[in-house]
Image (cartoon, rainbow, N blue to C red):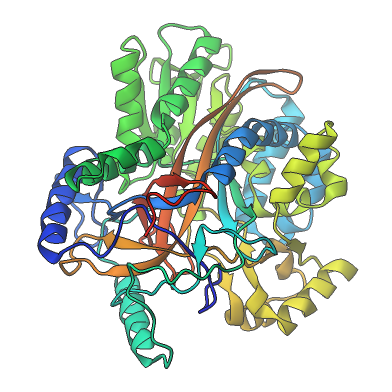
Length: 549
């Protein structure tokens, strides 16, 4: 993600700035509204199981081009099918990860489970995929659009963490200092100067998440908060531009469909969780939705450690926790090394993979979501392997930004040299989920030089995306009041559900969305990681004038 003085700015939902008294009042209301509607998290700095902070949020929704939003929604079932086919291609996964598993211990441990399960045959052939396709708008396109303006000024100054993040505060202060030092005086942040700039003409894929795809609750919750704020500000007419978002229902219904396929009424849905769950509301609302909507289905929450202690296989390889049979396993943990502090947790993962329970994700779905696999998929010759329809293949091919291997071969060595020559054009990504692991721009050469030729193969190189800016108020726990207008960039996540085996897909649908927004000065944007804020899209059209600054 790259931003500079020439970055275009999306016109906003309402006219800013708000009057100070009005801003103070509506922000205070919105904070309480967020907590009382479950848009909250546990604090990482002063953790207590008995208290919550509101999750950081953007006060009013951020603009997003309707055409691009609808394109992403329509494409999700194709991406679901693509990832399902990838997950069931043993040769492709094995070949693609061959170099990575030599140097990345975590991926190697996952692959060893995959290899052992393959050797004995899959006990459960059905997999449940609950995916999230993350994308950003790309502003470096030759087309022009009246939706963007490069002369809009800044103010005085992604998972979402409810703490006051010191790094983000430092970035805000640094940005404010830099803004004052600029010789070019910017316009009032609420004013549009009328000059258009080269605009987005497409969105680009950031990544596809196949495990613990969060914000099924917090995505819709952000729309609830911002809808309340717009009504309080007298802009109820704007709500029609905020798209319907049934992510929580769509994802939970996917789990229930898998439970129905398992077809044992007394069996339960098992959530695999971390030892400490900071993002508790997002997790619990999934559980509560199932219990309230399908009261005959019981939900359990267990850690990998607890599964190792209490889990076993029954006579027909059914997974038992004590005497309770498990129909569906939903992993909200297990995606990073810290979730496996001992061999016991790895043994628990293997136990579950060899069981009759339907997994979300199964081990092959988990591996399909690695960065190395997604880098391979960006090559047109590889994409042909999984998509037969020429139009679908063309549509999917357009969304991939440049992804490059760093393997120790001719192509990988050439990409390595390219990264050293022009590091500002790239981001360096490891085989990790959870945020905070990437290396950006000018930090890349030192990172690469510390790696051996073999170690490089655990990483991929990705073209830096240049998203347009939006401007608004970001509200964080403990931050100064009133909030200041800041420059922001957004990342849209589209949820998808796919259920089937290697031969047949029985369910495949798009299941809602979420929007994470971060300061334009922040590289990472995870909300739970402490760098982003909850947001929702306000859809704008190229021929609109109403509703912008």
